[in-house]
Image (tube, rainbow, N blue to C red; front, side):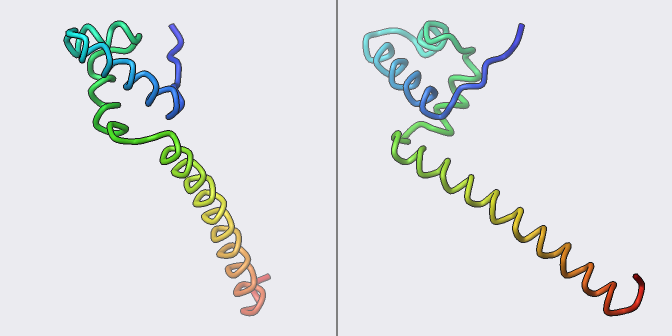
Length: 92
């Protein structure tokens, strides 16, 4: 069976749904099963995304994208520097 990767927005939505079920008198285990995830997954999500809001998650996703882009730029620049050093030393 193929596993589904949930987006942070979906995770927050499911956590809110589970919180409503728990407030209605269900246990955390019953709420986790009703939202379609395992109990350990529910607890991990709650620990990671417990107090997050959609705007916070969206901003975090944007920052992660920017960070990846900047890391790529730094790697390319380090490669260019290494090539220039080799050329300057006459190894090429």
